Length: 420
Image (spheres, rainbow, N blue to C red):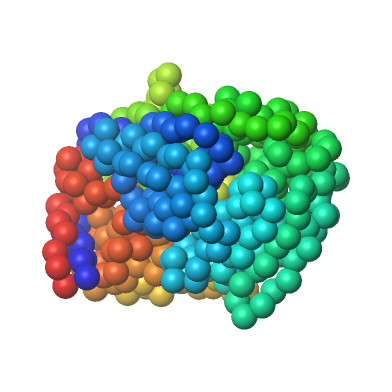
């Protein structure tokens, strides 16, 4: 396994362009299974571990896939789906793989999908998905770790989520575009990635209105057509590099994304003392000598994203006062606090809230990534720490960041990848 070796204390300076959004690319690749004929061309697909995992899943189902990892272009031909079963050995690697339930059920009338795996972030139930498909007339049973669903055709209707669900909203979009009758989703997730998926499906011939709002309406169509589509830039990767500029007191131009997708993050960065200059496809951030303390609560979009909570906490660790972060999205998303303490941070967790007393300096140590975003936050803390740090289990980071160490090196960081 690989690790990062980091010598901290150097401000990040320069320009970084982010690639396509992983959280949009994954559901769009899965959505291509709904297209019964021809090759669908998807551009700006980042070469990440999770992308390669979902490709294995849809190839197992019978799709033909090609991917140019240099041009970041993927083609998917789902003309010949030949199985309705997604096995555990593929599904266990990430939760997003459960998204294949919707397209397989819509295309084939039956689906047998293993319950998913992925990061250890507490309860990440798929109950939302199952309940919604049942409301659409599907008969669903749970047998030996597999969800068995039958419904041909699915029936449109009124679907609601008790809490906005990113993947739940996407899965129901898949089922609804070919259902019998109109579907209305209430309390849908509003993330920019949902808009991206809806744009893809609409370009293919779907009739989806309201994506990006809590109320989405889907008028059914008989079939979808193959298209060419470009995935939007990754706001979460952009936010990570912005937080990197903040924690190191650097100045970084981040492009390739829409900065309006990070409004709450931008506000928190300015509270910390950063200055932001906006451009058409990004922004330039200048970090303070030392961040101000802040308070933040993670919440579904447009709230502060849980995926950037660890990066924000890393900044709070060297702030000039006491910060408070409340985590309301994932129950166990404070695993990185133990690693931050190894670097000398003063962090205390009680229930869903962390209190961070800023210290003047962090010190290098051996630490470990427990999931994608926790790993990224720990790397940021190591960039600010004095001395040498080693970050283990960086395969987690590779799931969401393409060659992070190379991009940080180009920004002036002293970081390299080594084999453990």
